Length: 177
Image (cartoon, rainbow, N blue to C red; front, side):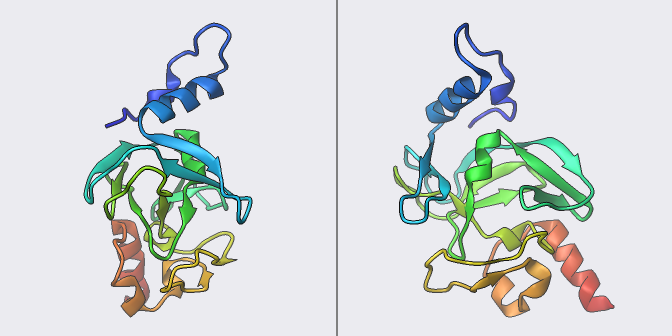
């Protein structure tokens, strides 16, 4: 299990902090790659994980009251910049491989993962309403086409996913109105 402050250690002489962070992440089982078919950056594992494994911890580099296309919603009124910053390359999928637990600050495998598998998560599992909705191109059979946050999705669709507690709270509040 990675420590949430992995990339705060000083870089060795002649190495930048970014190079150091990339080395640490590689040692923990991750590798940033460029997805050739779309040109998007993506995050892939270089080792196996079993379903339910805690892959690593994350932390907030900064916290904001409002979302941006680069933040992860960690509470009803909290949006964070993820650390280690390499996690920004974790893309959305309608058939996600990992879950970002914002209460525990952990990333958990939703299925068995083998080296080379992309780490992806279902954005509405953390996002109530997204700052930048988008047309999904995940390619999953169950693709929902447009992703704009949990409050814009039918309850029967959301019931098939792990959702964070703040998302459940927001959806219950919406239903009670």
